[in-house]
Image (cartoon, rainbow, N blue to C red; front, top):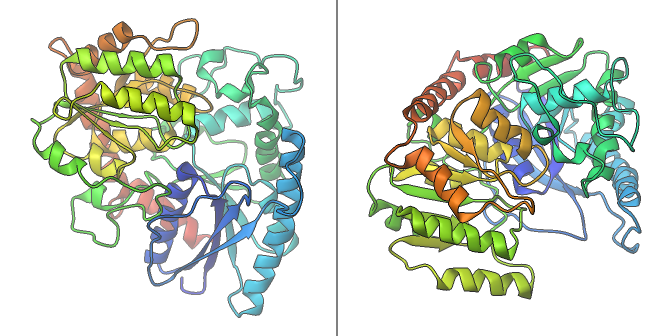
Length: 461
């Protein structure tokens, strides 16, 4: 496989970086050369705090914005600029690598970059789409956007629901990725996701790599998507947390955008097994003041110790809220950190529950650690993931928000009690242990995900 040179591209967002860098490492270990390239938005740049270094993997970047121009006047103009500038610079990158005697033999692109496949096709380079969301979410996109039977014809009407997909209960509007609804502020991004499906339809042999594993979404994967080759190769998390072996080269993602705290492990070590509530809303969500207050009160009244990730604030108003919350918490019952190695925390013996925004990476990390969840989805595919967590995999409970979208303290206490209180539902932990075992089995040698990755690579000869 040494003749293969993969170019993997993604945006520089934490949820995009983690799975793409992990895939890059696994391709290198399978014998390929890999170049990872950030699609950089010059107006919003965060640097990787802990870049990974390994033989066979090189890093570069290309711009997707015109830094000399002003801010686009609309979301649609911004998307158009990203496609125009990104396509030009990606083409130049691929040509440059060829001129340096490192020709790209295969391109792997991720969400929001569908135009990359057109660039590759024009240069005679085959490509695959790495879906960094669940197979269920990809199936929803295909259901609505494919050119033969897609339903999404109008930007004025909500997509028809409920919809039925293999292995899933009927999905209502509250179960769909939020931006599919015209009332969502991110609704203008819909054409980009439609372009993903239509771009794959242009390919002679459309290929999709899924960050999931066969046993988790078996019915959807087996059903396929009209001649698309689907390869479930996940979970794409460091192998040190999947096989309990000492793996110094794969004990972290190696691409954090935030500075990690250093004191939480000692604090966790002081707590009883399965007693700590871990709270994190990912790298993007910003909670309103009343939600922060209700969450703080609900956690405090639960009687359980908690570790809460509150990212450094970008505004003075948010900083005041964070300071207020921190002032209400003592260091024994609760610990607040600006960032942590989440996969490390979830695999700590003291963790008993994950209060989560239900981002796909966080969901997979909880599943593979065997930690049940309180689902508090905020936007995008998180709504679908929350549905799967509660009603399909049985590994958590979805918190019910009020009319203003706030999960109150009593509701939070109710959910925490269901997950880890005296009257907790035992089946939830049994299911979490089951999925943990199946995830680990998938990535072992000759496991389904290991086999699927090898099958994908063998098809490139």
